[in-house]
Image 1 (cartoon, rainbow, N blue to C red):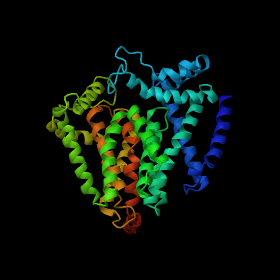
Image 2 (cartoon, rainbow, N blue to C red):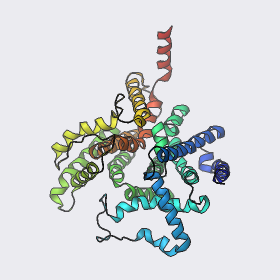
Image 3 (cartoon, rainbow, N blue to C red):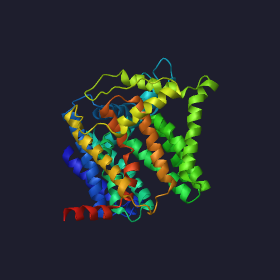
Image 4 (cartoon, one colour):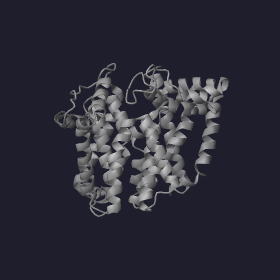
Length: 423
């Protein structure tokens, strides 16, 4: 019966997808669009099947689905409690510990938001993971379309590279398709970035876009606050560079220098505000988690500029270079090793075969994308001592940096050189 329901819902959602104006007017052939949607659905099935059959019970994705079924039962038996329990703290400290990773209302809220969403899917799915995954990825697919609509404005003649960068990056499509925070974060980031871009291009923040920006920022803060923190200087620099029409690189550098000065000195001015201690605490909490097969060593951070600066190369090494191609602590990492190697190769090709005069090459958005992703990578590299977690967290931001590389690479010249060498 569940198989039949899955097929019926898939047909209905595919039909609906092509009738949503925002998607219908994206400029993608309907057959291609449906193919990309089905690929997204297959990724959702794959991550569900792999995590339950290889890793077994007790994994994040199926745990969320199980908790969502309990919430659905609560919805049926006690609707009032279902509505208010997400706002209720059962901890002795109440609503304290907003940045804590354990035993905190705010830490639980990260998953509870997703659980509430999936619990509503259970009205139609009766708790089936794969049907819930179908509904979940129908929503997350909008994030891919949003990014496509943004990048195709910057690179109107680069349709295929934009489709690859926004829809088909392996780790992005895989990790954003599981029933968990990652897909929602990907969708919220896409909405936020697109609304800011449209507002800057049209030189007007409409009420609708402004509300979507605030809504996205709020949920990002509640689900994963370090993303919100990393966004602030990048957004400020993006707005200033667009409004002033100054050189984006100089403006972004200036904003980040000021941000760094504030970050490393505010603790000596305001005693209760110590952002460095929050990052250090996060690192400690991650290091103290149960070790896995993909565990790596981290250098302990200290609340000083010297410590953070000296640890930065290690952090970027973990995010940009690892897992190394030969680094195979577990077989499941092999596809991710190969994927990262391809991105590294793409970057090297970009250095020698990039197009210098191409639409969008000097857009402030591109600087926003690289500065924001660079900041996120640095923070993840500081605090996460696990390669499996690193590739998962990193995957959400890859479209922001891989898509411009794909679009700016001079493919015609590169192919011409390869053909000449083969003659």
